[in-house]
Image (cartoon, rainbow, N blue to C red; front, side, top):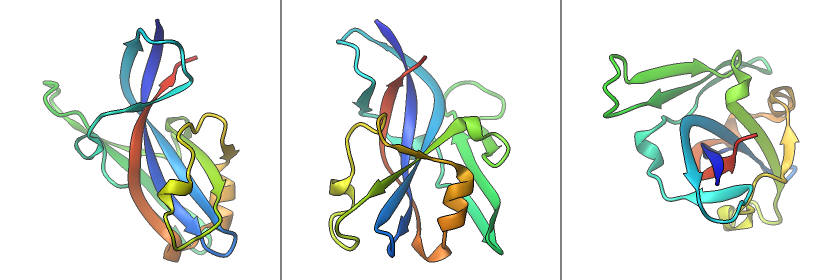
Length: 149
Protein backbone atom coordinates (compact mmCIF):
# COMPACT_ATOMS: atom_id res chain seq x y z
CA UNK A 1 0.00 0.00 0.00
CA UNK A 2 1.16 3.52 -0.82
CA UNK A 3 0.19 6.87 0.64
CA UNK A 4 -1.54 9.30 -1.74
CA UNK A 5 -2.25 13.03 -1.37
CA UNK A 6 -5.31 14.72 -2.86
CA UNK A 7 -4.45 17.20 -5.63
CA UNK A 8 -6.97 19.58 -7.21
CA UNK A 9 -6.17 20.33 -10.85
CA UNK A 10 -7.11 23.81 -12.03
CA UNK A 11 -7.18 24.91 -15.67
CA UNK A 12 -5.62 28.24 -14.81
CA UNK A 13 -4.67 30.01 -18.01
CA UNK A 14 -4.83 29.58 -21.79
CA UNK A 15 -2.16 31.29 -23.90
CA UNK A 16 -3.93 31.48 -27.26
CA UNK A 17 -0.91 32.77 -29.18
CA UNK A 18 1.42 29.97 -28.09
CA UNK A 19 -1.39 27.38 -27.88
CA UNK A 20 -0.49 26.44 -24.33
CA UNK A 21 -2.66 25.59 -21.33
CA UNK A 22 -1.26 26.17 -17.86
CA UNK A 23 -2.60 24.00 -15.07
CA UNK A 24 -2.14 24.75 -11.40
CA UNK A 25 -2.13 21.59 -9.29
CA UNK A 26 -3.14 22.55 -5.76
CA UNK A 27 -2.23 20.24 -2.90
CA UNK A 28 -5.08 19.60 -0.50
CA UNK A 29 -4.06 18.19 2.91
CA UNK A 30 -6.05 14.98 2.75
CA UNK A 31 -4.37 11.59 2.45
CA UNK A 32 -5.43 8.11 1.39
CA UNK A 33 -3.88 4.66 1.25
CA UNK A 34 -4.75 2.55 -1.76
CA UNK A 35 -4.50 -1.21 -2.01
CA UNK A 36 -4.39 -1.33 -5.81
CA UNK A 37 -1.09 -1.56 -7.72
CA UNK A 38 1.07 1.51 -7.23
CA UNK A 39 0.35 4.18 -9.83
CA UNK A 40 1.90 7.67 -9.70
CA UNK A 41 -1.48 9.34 -10.30
CA UNK A 42 -5.08 8.14 -9.93
CA UNK A 43 -8.28 10.05 -10.73
CA UNK A 44 -10.31 10.74 -7.59
CA UNK A 45 -14.09 10.74 -7.51
CA UNK A 46 -14.31 13.68 -5.14
CA UNK A 47 -16.45 16.81 -5.35
CA UNK A 48 -13.97 19.69 -5.63
CA UNK A 49 -16.35 22.60 -5.06
CA UNK A 50 -16.77 21.74 -1.38
CA UNK A 51 -13.01 21.76 -0.76
CA UNK A 52 -11.52 24.86 -2.38
CA UNK A 53 -12.52 28.10 -4.10
CA UNK A 54 -11.43 29.36 -7.48
CA UNK A 55 -7.95 30.92 -7.20
CA UNK A 56 -8.12 34.60 -6.33
CA UNK A 57 -5.67 36.32 -8.67
CA UNK A 58 -4.68 39.93 -9.20
CA UNK A 59 -2.22 40.88 -11.89
CA UNK A 60 -0.76 44.38 -12.15
CA UNK A 61 2.06 45.73 -14.32
CA UNK A 62 3.32 42.29 -15.29
CA UNK A 63 3.33 40.82 -11.77
CA UNK A 64 0.97 38.75 -9.65
CA UNK A 65 -0.01 40.92 -6.71
CA UNK A 66 -2.42 38.34 -5.31
CA UNK A 67 -2.48 34.58 -5.78
CA UNK A 68 -4.63 33.08 -3.03
CA UNK A 69 -6.65 29.95 -2.61
CA UNK A 70 -9.22 29.38 0.13
CA UNK A 71 -9.46 25.85 1.49
CA UNK A 72 -12.68 24.56 3.05
CA UNK A 73 -12.66 21.85 5.71
CA UNK A 74 -16.39 21.23 6.22
CA UNK A 75 -17.69 18.87 8.89
CA UNK A 76 -14.29 18.54 10.57
CA UNK A 77 -15.11 20.23 13.84
CA UNK A 78 -12.42 22.86 13.32
CA UNK A 79 -13.14 26.22 14.93
CA UNK A 80 -12.15 27.90 11.66
CA UNK A 81 -13.17 25.65 8.74
CA UNK A 82 -11.86 28.01 6.00
CA UNK A 83 -8.19 28.85 5.47
CA UNK A 84 -6.82 31.28 2.91
CA UNK A 85 -3.30 30.51 1.67
CA UNK A 86 -1.16 33.05 -0.19
CA UNK A 87 0.49 30.95 -2.90
CA UNK A 88 3.02 33.69 -3.66
CA UNK A 89 4.62 32.90 -0.29
CA UNK A 90 3.67 29.24 0.12
CA UNK A 91 4.48 27.92 -3.32
CA UNK A 92 5.03 24.39 -1.96
CA UNK A 93 1.22 24.02 -2.10
CA UNK A 94 1.19 24.20 -5.90
CA UNK A 95 2.80 22.72 -8.96
CA UNK A 96 2.36 24.39 -12.35
CA UNK A 97 2.43 22.47 -15.63
CA UNK A 98 2.24 23.60 -19.24
CA UNK A 99 0.58 21.60 -22.01
CA UNK A 100 0.76 22.39 -25.71
CA UNK A 101 -2.54 21.96 -27.56
CA UNK A 102 -3.44 21.78 -31.23
CA UNK A 103 -6.76 23.66 -31.22
CA UNK A 104 -7.38 26.55 -28.83
CA UNK A 105 -11.14 26.89 -29.34
CA UNK A 106 -12.11 23.24 -29.47
CA UNK A 107 -12.24 20.54 -26.79
CA UNK A 108 -9.54 22.00 -24.57
CA UNK A 109 -9.97 19.48 -21.79
CA UNK A 110 -9.87 16.49 -24.12
CA UNK A 111 -6.39 17.57 -25.24
CA UNK A 112 -4.96 17.24 -21.71
CA UNK A 113 -3.31 14.08 -20.35
CA UNK A 114 -4.90 11.97 -17.61
CA UNK A 115 -1.64 11.68 -15.67
CA UNK A 116 0.09 14.99 -14.94
CA UNK A 117 3.13 13.51 -13.18
CA UNK A 118 5.24 13.54 -16.35
CA UNK A 119 4.08 16.95 -17.59
CA UNK A 120 6.41 19.90 -18.17
CA UNK A 121 6.87 21.81 -14.91
CA UNK A 122 6.81 25.60 -15.05
CA UNK A 123 7.84 28.07 -12.36
CA UNK A 124 5.52 30.73 -11.00
CA UNK A 125 7.87 33.32 -12.53
CA UNK A 126 7.51 31.74 -15.98
CA UNK A 127 3.72 31.66 -15.65
CA UNK A 128 3.85 35.32 -14.64
CA UNK A 129 5.92 36.21 -17.74
CA UNK A 130 3.36 34.63 -20.08
CA UNK A 131 0.20 35.57 -18.16
CA UNK A 132 -2.48 37.85 -19.55
CA UNK A 133 -5.78 38.51 -17.76
CA UNK A 134 -7.73 37.78 -20.95
CA UNK A 135 -6.71 34.11 -20.84
CA UNK A 136 -7.45 33.53 -17.15
CA UNK A 137 -9.91 30.68 -16.59
CA UNK A 138 -9.38 29.41 -13.04
CA UNK A 139 -11.76 26.45 -13.35
CA UNK A 140 -11.15 23.12 -11.64
CA UNK A 141 -10.84 20.19 -14.00
CA UNK A 142 -10.59 17.20 -11.69
CA UNK A 143 -9.13 15.82 -8.51
CA UNK A 144 -6.34 13.27 -8.53
CA UNK A 145 -4.49 11.28 -5.93
CA UNK A 146 -0.71 11.46 -6.27
CA UNK A 147 1.84 9.25 -4.54
CA UNK A 148 3.55 10.99 -1.64
CA UNK A 149 7.34 10.79 -1.59
